[in-house]
Amino acid sequence: MTNIIVAFSKPEDARSIKSIIVRNGFPVVAVCGSGAQTVSSLDGLHGGIIVSGYRFNDMLYAELRELVPQEFAMLLVASARRVGDALPEGVTWLPMPLMVHDLLEALLKLDEEQSRRKRIARQKPAERSEGDRQAIAQAKELLMARNNMTESEAHRYIQKCSMDSGSSMVETAQKLISLMG
Image 1 (spheres, rainbow, N blue to C red):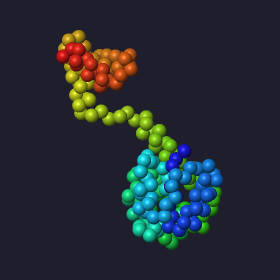
Image 2 (image 1 turned 135 degrees about the horizontal axis):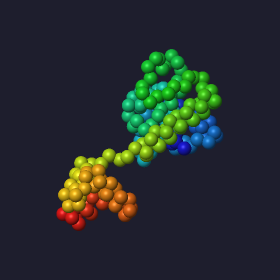
Image 3 (image 1 turned 180 degrees about the horizontal axis):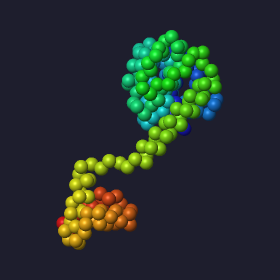
């Protein structure tokens, strides 16, 4: 489940929103009364949802959005006259007066989006550094020169050795270089 931070300038608003969220099974990791406190509560968190009011003593919600990493979604609870037409990217708006059903529905939707983004990020292969790519290329060249392999055969050979030994392709390439070089 996604980390939720409740941020409202009025403590009674924050407590009531937190109470609704917790009663319905969502974890609230922090309750904040200012923008700066909200930003500092993000330390150690890798994504989540910030349920926020429009104005804090030290900043507006739009300024807070600019300070928050993109891994965090923001759920703004404010009146229509305050919000206007344009919302910053990553901000979902709920009108006042707040309906509990609408709040829970928006949290579920944002939670699903967060889970989907994390799943996609996990499935994306990690980018190799230039040094890693060079090590693999050098190992391929050695295999091609010494064993008369094509580049694709050398690549498959490194992949197979990597899978058989349970090590990464880079580690396998480095072992091949040290053995053959």
